[in-house]
Length: 134
Image (cartoon, rainbow, N blue to C red):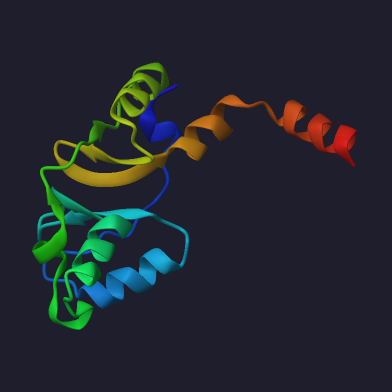
């Protein structure tokens, strides 16, 4: 199994996206971080809840900031053809919750730890667990 088979879709802001809008997206609890892309779709950064919190703690107004102002540059990404085994090793070694998936440097998706876990746990186990617990 490879990354492209289990990755999820992700909407990525551009560097000029407003931080308040990004914070609202992060508050949807669908994501804890988002990749930031340029006009051609290349991943140029990542913006997380921590980045937003640091800006707020520094007294900045989110409305006056862009993703480019607070993002982490040169984020770790994985190729869509990386195996799940290598992905697990990479994410656990780097303590990553989520990682952008790229094809030739362009964003094609995102993988979280729960995406990986879900792909490896059989449906039968999930069903029997709930039956036993119910």
